Image 1 (cartoon, rainbow, N blue to C red):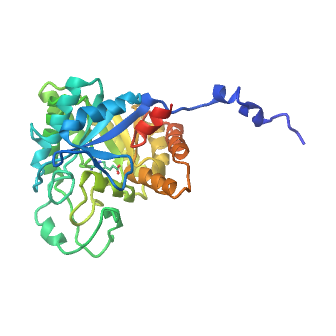
Image 2: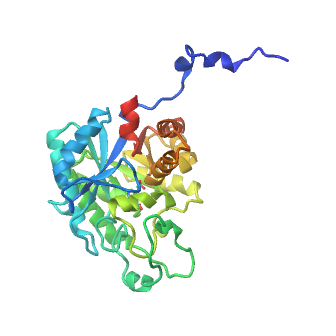
Length: 348
Ligand code: PBG
């Protein structure tokens, strides 16, 4: 037996750290923050233990807690005071994200990314304006859905196509991104999966002199059942129908490279793949095919399932959280949006 090569020699306590290929750093992590205009006290998010919605008055306190762990960036989600068919509170100057952003930029050194989408702001819960007649066609098709069912569980047949008006939504997303940037956001992150959204936002920002505001595109965003708990957190579940006509089919990977290429052409600064763990092949593909930084979004379901198992005593939460983020680093993402940001950074 030839044992010239004994890889175990490199696994001693002295050598292992020296030859370690990847690591999780606080500076790679982005923590999601939910600001809610309808509450005046912090509210825990049941399906995401340890996460909460905060009122605007608590924004700074929340951001400072995160900053104390070493995390230097957040992504802001807003729950507006009211909703309507077009999502007009999304681009209101006194909207919840705009207000929170102004305060954070004024009082902290946190890097602020804002999620740009309409699903939290529209009364129907879709990521844009509905095509004419879409509501009527979809009505009565699905009743009694819960956040945990997620719209991804909706049957793929038997109901007429429900979809959003792509081109009309573009202008609304551009307005929304612009209002976030005017409030001081460092980077805007369009997540609606509307064709042309990055270009429309880049044009609008440049037109009004906001050429320094960066864009992180949710370039390859899948129509995933792993977003279930987020719908609970941000109150953005579609009232009917699902998102399969705009988010990507989980069965596809080549298609992701096409989506990403379009966003690169339109001026994206950072390319995101979402979700992360079930799509690490896509993270790697994007890494290998493009030179821009790659972000991975370790989504609500990925977080909730580890918590649920840990609660049952089946997994060690701290260990699986760290290992999850390491695997995303190994796939070669540059930055990770994760609900574990605070707890993992705190232990580094
Ligand atoms: C808004 C948005 C969603 C998430 C981030 N931005 C929900 C969705 O697209 O259905 C999901 C994040 C998560 O699950 O953690 N469009």
